[in-house]
Image (cartoon, rainbow, N blue to C red; front, side, top):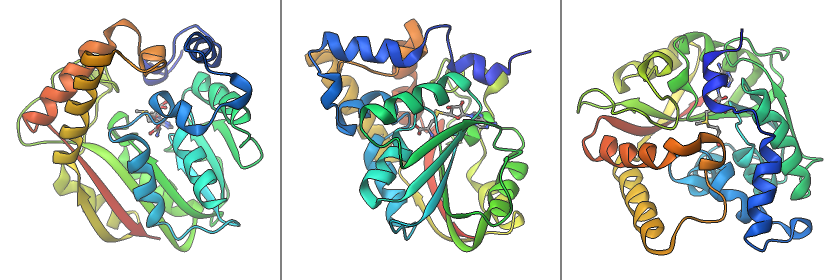
Length: 273
Ligand SMILES: C[S@@+](CC[C@H](N)C(=O)[O-])C[C@H]1O[C@@H](n2cnc3c(N)ncnc32)[C@H](O)[C@@H]1O
């Protein structure tokens, strides 16, 4: 039976075709696409590409670095790091449809030789010990109840001294989340950590946390600016609606509310293996 989390994210359509069609309708030439053309759909997390770069800055990347992106989605963050630092990135994601689309979209922007994607579970990584020079995970833990296993697996596949960057949505002090949200239409697949448990989870997995950044206020402003922009000039050619479907606008409204009422927080943790 299909995993309910993968069912939440994927629909029956071939996602790369849907995205290509929307870009074509907006007048984009698919032979000359840039990663910026894709950023409104393939950086599937709050604060978009800027947040990915913030993680990359802490990861000490060089052009020969091999990076793991755990829960890589449509591959935007992996492509951003590959393009910015020249490194190689392997993405792993539970949702096969996202991995397929990520492979296709990487070819569109001529990064197919530096990023690869495969289907797999963050809590049982199909990689040898000590394989990667750095790893990141962006907005994934909130779908995973066994975060201890997820972080233990990340530690196992990282070389000693490698940086692990975790950017996630956490439970805030403001009360229960308003659903639907982009990672869950109802509570059964939403597993938000509370800020107080994150450091112990990471430490128990064998990491040393060297920096913590709470970006909740910035996330709230980012969502408010985005919804204002969309109300004024309409949505960009392609958005998360391509795969989240018709309840996407309601999800956006709930995100503004959840952030404003501090029902959720966005926090990044930077650790060394
Ligand atoms: C909100 S998206 C974020 C995607 C990507 N990190 C980004 O920021 O663009 C969450 C992703 O986590 C993936 N995911 C959820 N549970 C997972 C698991 N147990 N193992 C691997 N990926 C998982 C989903 O399939 C989805 O692609």
